[in-house]
Length: 272
Length: 283
Image (cartoon, rainbow over all chains, first blue to last red; front, top):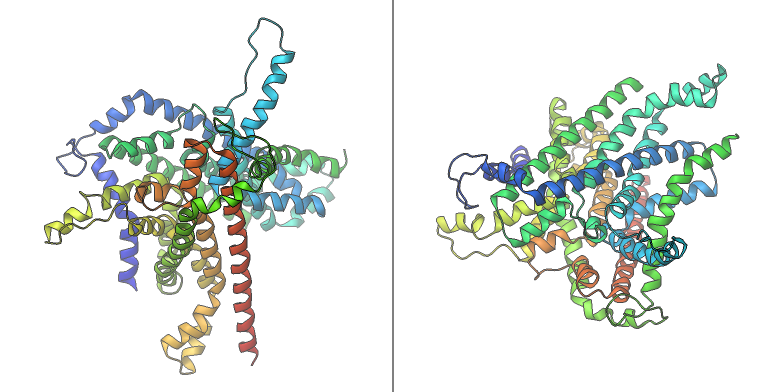
């Protein structure tokens, strides 16, 4: 059993390790190790296409994680105090958002938004003053952020609701018995307790958005995110530069994950 | 401001977002699936079942998905179960959490990069080159169903291990002792006590992996090399290359319907199995 488990761990980590090792390869050939070098990292970081894609990915990930954790937390807190049809509707929405395959979300967002823009753009042009070019809505950074926010918001609601459910109800009751306003109770009791969950939700949302390929593939318009760049480079062949980018991306998500874990852990301790 | 108004205000942004970015787009897909293709691609309003009648044109993609998604789920289950068992029952409590985290972490890193790693390993200069060194020549791994299966297991193993671990970890270890005290062999204890009690974990894990596999695109695109393709690959082709939105919408709608039906059937089966077990234990 133990031996078997060791094999599975090797299976999980060898591929990642191989990429990391080959990213430090001095040689041009992807398959032969020819000494240590960091030249591919230099190449990757000096490639304007890579840096452009990285900037797009970071911007999209930051704003979608921000909106998702803000609106997701608001929804989770409200759902705590609601019963009846509205709650059922929201449970259904979250279920749909998580259940529907990412590729279908991508497609639906693409044709949904393009159809919507086709309706809105003429209307904007009609009310815009003569002689000035009217702004035109199109797929790009905005649609990327909106689509990622939709999915990650569902994740945040799930995470924060789990924390709220684990929270001791008597704390908020005690607070209101002591004449705290609902706002004060929220700020001084509820928020500190759910904050680790909210931050973990932010980090997981960021990681999801940063790594997402399939939704972005459909809704990015003329923008290129890092996963889209990596995907199109892989199609052209395996290069040491991709190994370097891959290693950096893996390292970045690892750091995010460890931080999210520590936050959740610390929150757990404070709760007891 | 009453509590109810406040709750409504708090729900408003999320609700609007879900409406505009989830419900409206999914409705558009459904509407488009009854429409017609424009001369230069895109969509022309109509009400016809033509797109659905045309589905057999993409039969190969559906067939591959409906074979490889269950097979991949099963393969992941078979590989994940012993590991989950080891972590939950046999591993020392000191290392347990650490070892579990090590299994989960890869799932939250880029699946694109992780699948890419296998192009590297299974490609001509990877494992086949190593095999050639020990005399086994001309092994082709990349762009085969096997490669896709390896990618699937590699990608989704963590998602399978976690729920099974949780159900085995919750299992009362005294039950196992009682079973062996009553003279049951280890195999019998496993088959009659451990396995039935971990059924909820197996069900959850398989469901999660199966759902994700039904919509898979990346793994077959990277490791199947156009020879092993899923419905996901057909959808990318229909929407981004041939711009046939009406037909693409019908394919997407069909995929979701097949998924819902199989998930419902599967849940029924699981709850039936669970019910049977209770009957036995009552006797």
